[in-house]
Length: 201
Image (cartoon, rainbow, N blue to C red):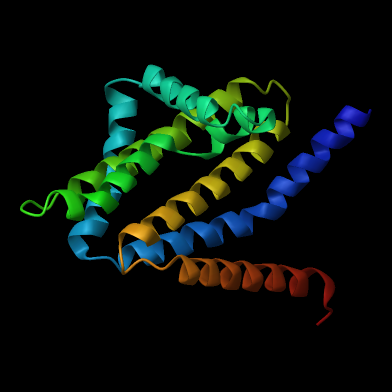
């Protein structure tokens, strides 16, 4: 009985979080679109390329698991993070964004930023898709409440991590503006839902 209540609660929290996820995606895309057109195009093509690769060529599960192992090793000093961090941190995407940040200082004759941005978004998509697949396989419940609840947290924190890293690398991307847009859109949606349900006309 308790397990069923927890399951229903998790599913309810997932439903409540949908406007926040929508707002975060909208805020993130808005900031990406403010980049140089070549940069924003590379980012979106990286995501599309991974989805096509995943669907028609192969699922790079071994690469994904290796990345999870790296993150687990990094956080092995604190056991709870060994389980959580590999799910919420897209390590390969972060690695390529670090290269994007360092490239202008190391290689000044060639602009490699578009390549690093492409592979950052490619591996970011890989992380989200394969994490979703893994979490879904672990949840056999009818509602799949554990899957929806966990994936909501994974997605939100992963987007936050990507936004923070891109803010460090590219001047036109603002993490603060991303947060403001996210909170504004989410607040407007929640307010509209509240007014529709509880304020009589």
